[in-house]
Length: 381
Image 1 (cartoon, rainbow, N blue to C red):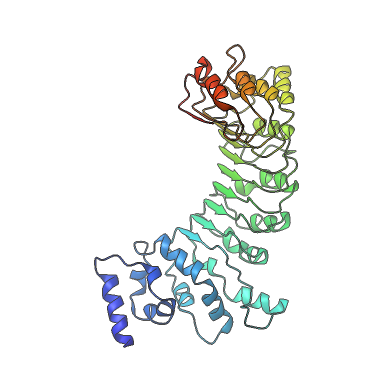
Image 2 (tube, rainbow, N blue to C red; image 1 turned 45 degrees about the vertical axis):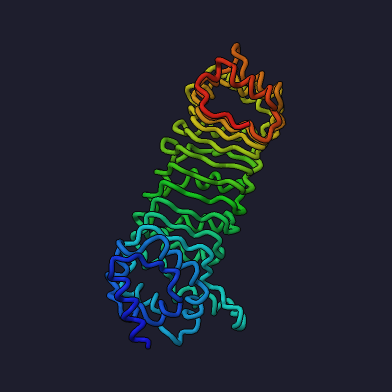
């Protein structure tokens, strides 16, 4: 029966029909398929799809973990790792992986046992050519354990370590390994418990000199300020710092620190003193040192009608194409400020989001009929 099952699956995989990996029972994968298929063919870049990666490392995580801890069986996954069959995989999603976490049906492990287990099987060392790695919703201790392997990925350009309850200390451990991450262009550390000091650390880290995309949203940054010039000053194009308890002074620091920045998500922060930014720029009379944003998100920042006047006439906003002002305390009076032809610099805006503000039909009409918004393609009201 088993031989017949193997032959049927083998024949199907080698035919021109499409096989849904998730339809094959997990025990068939772990006990049988890996034992008779030509492994180099199965794990070639042609056959290892995102769906297969997700099935193996997400849906099968509990079973694979149990096999690792049990040590009675040599898991097929480990055999494939040892034979370097994952060498050519470029993208890997390892959500929910907890290397040192014991199954619920076993007795709790002490710290020594946890460390031995974590060190005995570290799958990341068998994926040396990754260009994109996601380690989301992962145990913090596991992140620290795999940090040397992350540092050795010389082709890695996209690292996603969001939603891990990660502290400044853990982030420092990951990003200060002996081997540098000089190829990294995208870094996502959002939804963690990072504090103010991580801003300075990230900006001064020589490993990140090629960074183009940085997401630090949903952390308790409180202040965005660096004492030294950022190592990615001339490369950063996108910055996301939504819901980080930042104020208008932090926004100014950002606009000055990254001259190549085109996208800024500053939503759900404290922008009640937007007037201060306008006045500061006017006093300096030097807009050249500021970045020229194309996309700006100020959603949910408690902006009022009178404050929209300053947004409309801040000179460095003159290149904006996408502006999100949704979820603010704005009504039709605020739209009159935005559309004031005598002061507004927003003539290039193509997409304007004023949803969940209560601007009403009159407010929307103020925007659509203004010559300032002649380039407008979409108004979300």
